[in-house]
Length: 115
Length: 112
Image (cartoon, rainbow over all chains, first blue to last red; front, side, top):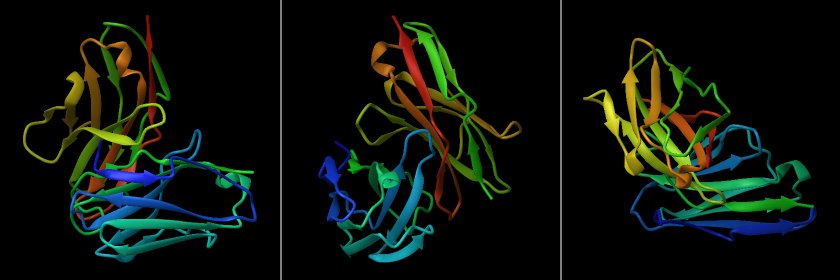
């Protein structure tokens, strides 16, 4: 148990569906991240939120929409996804601005399959 | 720009044998270095980190890593592996005041 909880653990959705991934951290951290982990590819940083403001968006398609209502919660809203978006989506949190100087604590991930 | 290279995508090792997982980084400034482990169907868990001080860093589960500035390396070692060490291992680097960059990972296979 890392203190970062992701739900759901598994999600299967059609290309026309709309769904959301949820991440919650109980560590008092002020920075949260979304990563995408595809087979045989390095971890891809998608979004970074620091103090509830988005500080990084790594050229992620608009069909992925993050939301950070407070420092403990992070969402990833999904709509009209493509099969190539199937991956493990990992949420992480850290103490400090952005990812400066500290390690990240990861959730267990949501395994997303787009059909 | 910083980058991380893990040369071995897979490493098979017999149980109770020693193992070394290689990691090299490139950066023009001082860095922080990390090793994470990912067990099947899990997120990433921090094994150990180097921020400053002693170049030999000890982590959880009997792992250790040595920071070598001249060779820009941060190789991970364990003197005797166990079947439970089967996982994927990620090296990561962070320039001070910048984001963390992960390597592609090395899958450790423990052979009985």
